[in-house]
Image (cartoon, rainbow, N blue to C red; front, side):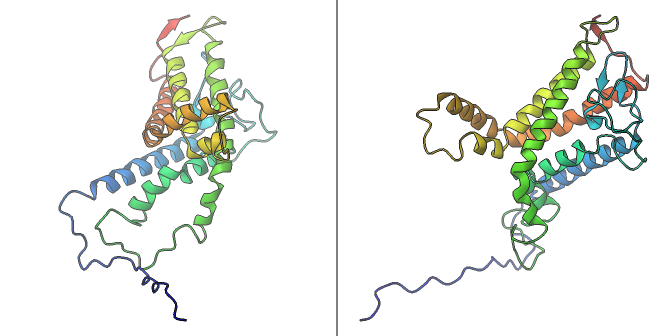
Length: 271
């Protein structure tokens, strides 16, 4: 008896464009801005992490997030709220040698950042109807992109580091110029940065999955359902928080550096 099943569909191949692009708009502007933005942040962060200076304002207990937690034995007195290791770091090793790599890996494996640098740095793909420079496409099935699956674990590390940054921000409120509670522009800068970092961290797709990705029903978990709903709302703005927090990290570090170096004073509101 002859088979009545339809013949298998022919294998689809990638579209082949005879020209560089079929588009007439400025499709290259988005990838270009992405390259400039991410490269600028990485360059600034690298310089500041290796500078090992102007990261701590002892009068008001301001610690830049690029140096938190400060782990080297050569950290300025009072800046290492969680204690230090028993030796001094060489010049090429950041004082925040644990937190910085984990945070970079958290962002590097982030679902949004993957799309951003895949399209801009790797041009895979750059944009719709734009010819790719690559002859083959393997996705994330080969090394080193297999490591992208570790994003869910870097999320937990990012939560722990956000707790440390929050602790730093709260501790600064308890170290006014005359002791006790104090409030200055630096406190508001640190607090704003921490709040936005929490928004970026909690809006992560992995966080949303942790809250409800494995559940079949929320009917007997009203608290968890509420948390999942709020995280889902944040998740719609994950791209926005991804870029905003890059800016607030730079501005926060720059403000602390300017105050620590004596370039500008910290305007005090209380004490």
